[in-house]
Image 1 (cartoon, one colour):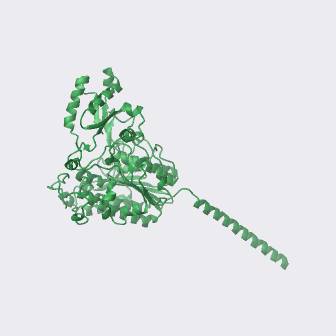
Image 2 (cartoon, one colour):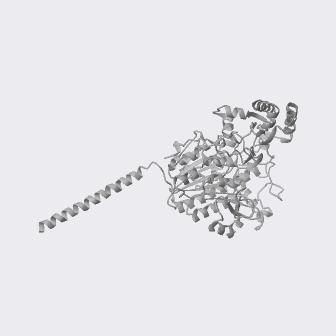
Image 3 (tube, one colour):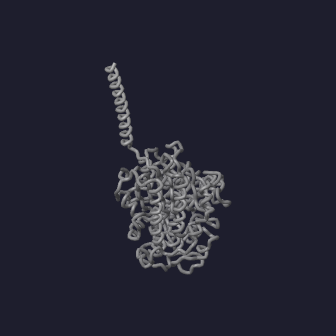
Amino acid sequence: MQRKKYFLLAVGCALILSVNFSNAQKKSKTTADQSNNPYVTPKLVVGIVVDQMRYDYLTRFWNHYGDGGFKRLVSEGFNCKNNHFNYAPTSTGPGHTSVYTGTTPSSHGIIGNGWYDKESNSNVYCAGDDLQTSVGTSSDAGKMSPHRLTVTTVTDQLRLHTQMRAKVIAIAIKDRGAVLPGGHTANAAYWFNGSNEGNWISSSYYMSELPKWVRNYNTSRVIEKYKKPWTTLKGIKTYVESGPDDNEYEGLFETETTPTFPHSTPNLLSKKEDFEILKSTPYGNSITTDFALAALEAEKLGNNGTTDFLAISYSSTDYIGHKYGVNSKEIQDTYMRLDLELERLLRALDKEVGEGEYTLFLTADHAAINVPAYLEKQKIPAGYFDRSVFYPKFREFLHFKYGTAELVKNASNNQLFLDHKIIQNLDLGLREVQETLAAELLSYDAYDRVYTAYQMQHSEFTEGIPYILQNGYNQKRSGDILMVHKPGFIEYPRTGSTHGSPQIYDTHAPLLFYGKGIKNGSSVTRTEIPDIAPTISALLGIAFPNGTTGTPLEMVLE
């Protein structure tokens, strides 16, 4: 009896050990499977687009940056030093779209901030949608959607991959800087309605009313603390990386007589009127960070059990660049302050999501030219395109050659749209007319190159300016003639900077990757804007956006 008892005890122990060993094996196998997972699952992806940021703003103002913003991203992340837009026009709508779709206007259809629509015979806005209603304002500022975007975004693919469990929130001062990165399936896109409201708003495309946290944010009137003079962050004498504060190449705020610090117009100081002016100060970027951090907390981004996506666009850099130019004290001060905003954002991400638990990229939607009037004074070839001289001369040619100037229906985004019916009624060939007009335009001093739609459709360019133009040419939406100004020449006032051309000063933009799944390092190998979305998609192990033409950057990924 005693022997039987010991035998049963031994058998029981053996069974327990066997089960424990089996469970340990399963656990070990599961752990091994997880450790061998080739894909990275950060809790949150953060996409940052800085509107109108040249690459050299990283290097030019480097000594003024702290350790927690740009320098942290560069020193701990991956810096693509030779990153370019591979299409034109280089403007905000196409820029944000190309970053998030992994392709160019030739595929995604956003060929400008606005363009002439051949089907409706009217001008359209890239994010405008009259079928929607405003949410959070009684104005029309919220009548927006991504309905003109013809392909998916990386944010769309993340939502699809997770059966819509992933949250996607897009935020920008500009409506198009939020709507287009959010894609077709964003949980929400928010933009800032200045005027006399100073509120964050949205569209019925996303929601019927603002969430409670957004309503509370708007009613808090925290925005009013930014209605104050714009002074320099540091002593202005230390801003040796930019030109004189008082010069002829900068614009003015209303009531100002010189474009100098401090900027303290009545509308900046007023607590109740004209919040629109904040867009043209660094405070617009601070407002963006404030709201992004509110969204991070309220939506529990990065803490929802799957990878979420926060798309942020800093828009005030563009407003300031247009007003003051790339060589101004104002631009320098703006980027020094933006550096602090990035540090604030990164600290919040470390706290709310966890250091090492998120992946981030930073790029721009385009760069910018130095003020041509300034370049001229430095004996650098530059100048301005004078429409009042060009159009009378061109119309005279059209009348002489064809008996009518009505052949041209629209001129926009450096393209001419021809009236194909008139050409047909005149018994003319479309290709012949395109080539004749291109030859005439090329004879004008303002133009460096002119191409026809026929060339765009029947050639395959692989480098240089024609390659960039072809990537921006959409067969259904683009025009018949594409014109390129001479390097250094723009159609713009003589103060402030602009962008839009295929020239390198408009295409060279920063690209930084940081965080989970990202190598530490840098490269001068050429990268292109459409490479961003497939790189993030490859890192996450999700399907690429369905129009992708870019290539994942293997050198960036761990």
